[in-house]
Image (tube, rainbow, N blue to C red; front, side):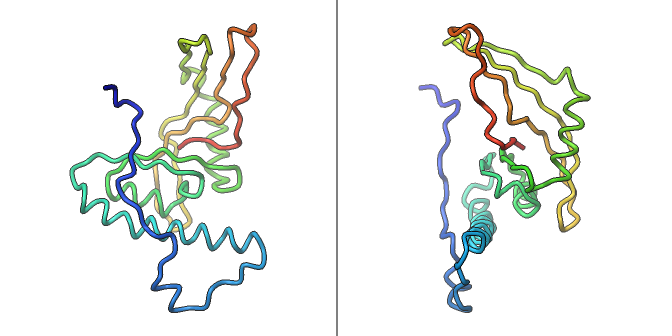
Length: 173
């Protein structure tokens, strides 16, 4: 059995901390923006609560955390780095504007950071990346990140090389 690419959930936690909710009034969720802010805050707090338990349960296991753009921020990066975990995260425009600007500038200066390949179904791929990007979060912690652009080139060679849609507006860290 080939286990490459296998992803397993090794822990879970409640998004809302029952102790915090009991200690305060529930937030006013009158607008979607307020709801999203509360939801995101709860998810990051749940990750912060889950991380020590994961480290205790799997102290020698090399973990790789996978997350969406919510986790592409200082607190989540610090937790991963503190625990010596790898991570693959996405980030959206606006979430980390200075990081995105540095990335876009350095990508233009890194033309050799390119890997081309063809899948068995004749889909051609072109990956580009930037290594060792410096990122300073809102709390002044410094991080070194590697990044891939969202517009990885996918071409369907069966259809005369027409590009396939691939820009989802997010980038991988």
